[in-house]
Image 1 (cartoon, rainbow, N blue to C red):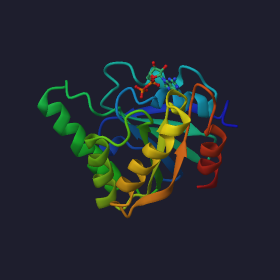
Image 2: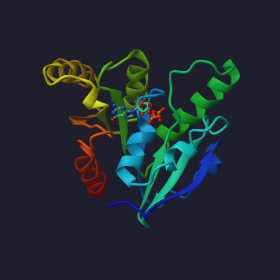
Image 3: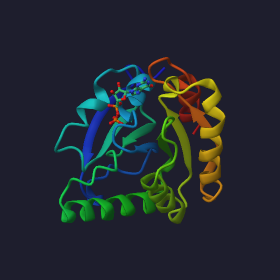
Image 4: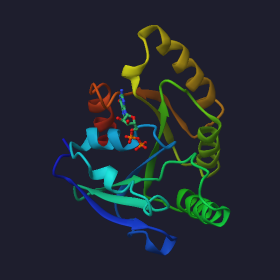
Length: 194
Ligand code: GDP
């Protein structure tokens, strides 16, 4: 559906580097290793595309992709690796807050959550930030193939309980597996509908 439509545009390190807010954009956020690159690759059918933006040195950038002529797909660096020096982390957090609170064309943030782990404290931090900025976000469970069917309900309940604390959350949780293709068409149609 998106194959051939997506291209890397730029990595942004400061607010004045953002492209003009003339298209609607969707954003992907999640802890390091949550499966974000795999999901973006599965969605777009372009293997290696998101991984390229994951290489060291690009990790503190807001990565912009054009999705056709009407949308941007925005890939935020994975959070949770507290390895970077404090000033780097602080600079990044300032940029992230400025971006999330000052981007009128941002339609939705997909907050990726590993189906095996559920909502962790860093996920709560980003949800709180999104909530303060009144940016609608939607939880996306990743790696659903790694959990047993009977474990799903418990994890969905845990995520739902957390979402309920954040009025900016979209109630529907998307369950995905990049490996098996589960949930990918649904996520595509959500993006198309925004
Ligand atoms: P990122 O750091 O969030 O971009 O995560 P990656 O997409 O690089 O994935 C991290 C690891 O999880 C890799 O070893 C992937 O192969 C694995 N992975 C990602 N998505 C899935 C999935 O849907 N199912 C399974 N079983 N493994 C996955």
